[in-house]
Image 1 (cartoon, one colour):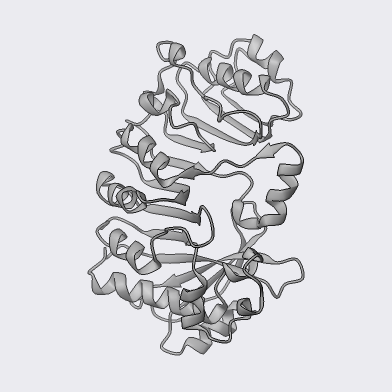
Image 2 (cartoon, rainbow, N blue to C red; image 1 turned 180 degrees about the vertical axis):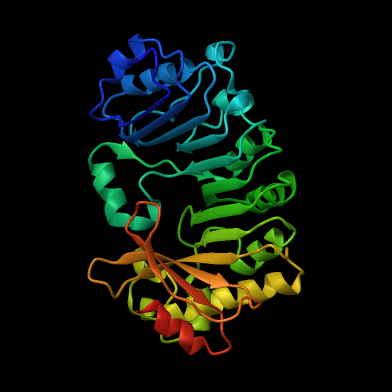
Length: 341
């Protein structure tokens, strides 16, 4: 099938990757790899497979990295002349190397770009510890590295952007770039983490102000690294105050009461600043510590111009999350009840 296949999708830890690389794939346009590297040679095989695609349309590489190896390249410089990346429309990659040649070649046709983590970092310290014990690493980009990547790319058609990063002193510059560089941006998803407890990160109100200049956005997903001071100011009875500073999983997440106030404040701030009339919804990530296993849920806040209130429960992003749809009413209690349905 290698002479006629147009799409490949498989978990890298069970696929005969070395054998696949030996074959030619003249019609391959869509490639999806998931899982985790088991040895360093798989990284070079992945790059060879990407380099064999003459006119790729979609590339998704979501792989957990080896702890003792640097972030691998997806496209080597010497393969640039063999691969035409100008037609690439969708590109998803976990833990990218900022110096990867693909970021110089891709861009003109890109509509969706995701610089993400795999698995999701917000699933907690336990997941991270399990992977580290197994010789794996999850090297999230810094906001400076994200900015380096985006600055190398010209993406006039970009409609969807996802960034996962550890905040540093260039985070604001990164968001200013995002707010000004993409005239057709419709959906934005930001996952902000602090490099360490107490390190620098933009507050939610500053993030909303920076994003308010993007007049084309329809949806925004925000997973912000709130501080203990932020959440206790909004909800003095928040259970996270009962835990030690070492227990990051609990006090990093706001209570439902605080989350409602965050969402309301963000929407009101954006609407006061005259945000775009096509905006449909704001999503904030919520951690339900009351659940026996702990669950992450995207909570959707609708602008005031949407009448009524609706609630539904659906799967989201193939992670252990649930999406709750709510409208921001004048009575905050209605939202809090909906969160716990």
